[in-house]
Length: 239
Image 1: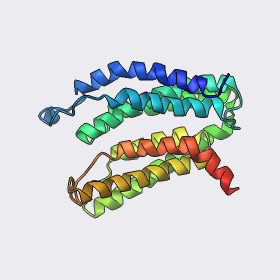
Image 2: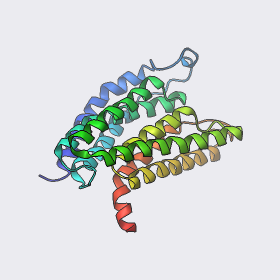
Image 3: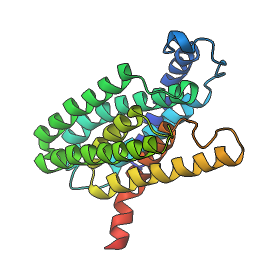
Image 4: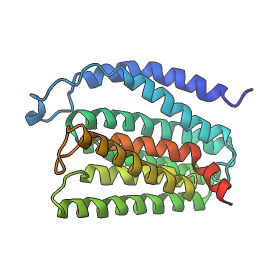
């Protein structure tokens, strides 16, 4: 069987499931009372597409790319539902962040909980202790880095990064760290760069001011996909 068959099949199924998710997001039930009068974000046609593409990247990394952290199908079988749930949550968070510039805790904390349950199980069925410890350390490092950046930006009077972004960095760092330090470092760094470029674009088009805020979460998620897809090959190229 071609190594692309499973990622493509999963992408199609997940994209189909993304249609009702998009309809739910269009109802904007996640808004707080002081946000209900904000402009309607429009149809979320991109949600199924983002879900499908993200799921394909995740499945390719979990099942098709040889890696010491994923030694066999029992581990991959545990990682599959764990990371697909995280993917679903991240796409929902991206849509909410684009709408109200906020990453709700009611989705963020269960997402972290999913990783903190799924990854230890993956370690017990064959993944081993090393990738689990690396994932936890990577999550702490990513969250700590973004917390430092958030505090520095706050000291300069900017609200570019919030605590939601800090928690998201911890989630993404934990998930990426399971696969390797290269994936975690490239994913977090790429998200930082994508977010910076996005911010520059908004500033140049005068959509935000220097002290304004914008949705940084989606850029972080794009960076995580880059790290997941290219982290291993990037490290091999430097070896």
